[in-house]
Image 1 (cartoon, rainbow, N blue to C red):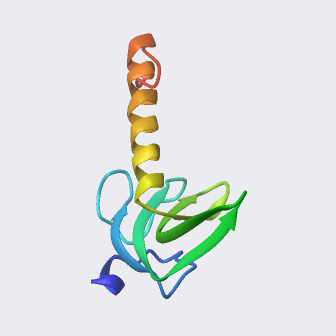
Image 2 (image 1 turned 90 degrees about the vertical axis):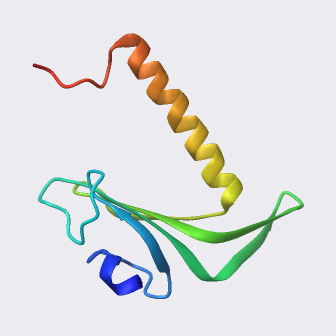
Image 3 (image 1 turned 180 degrees about the horizontal axis):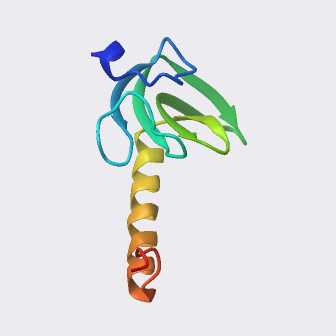
Length: 104
């Protein structure tokens, strides 16, 4: 499963990519100027302590943009739920004010 969806720009060969989206389609390589998003599982969790609290990341979210290149986030399920909820609320706000729609 991993190699057929691993993006060409993947920076972590040990990651097990599970979902790879480019413009909401499964593809291996982005078109010029487009982005890739890839979600996967880390082979070994990364645990650290911050401000006295343990935090364990066992998943990756990688974003490739033409401007920034690859950006990799080590995350966990709670992080993804927070990101998903925040993104949904942001999209609602965009719809409320008519932003983010294609110009005709």
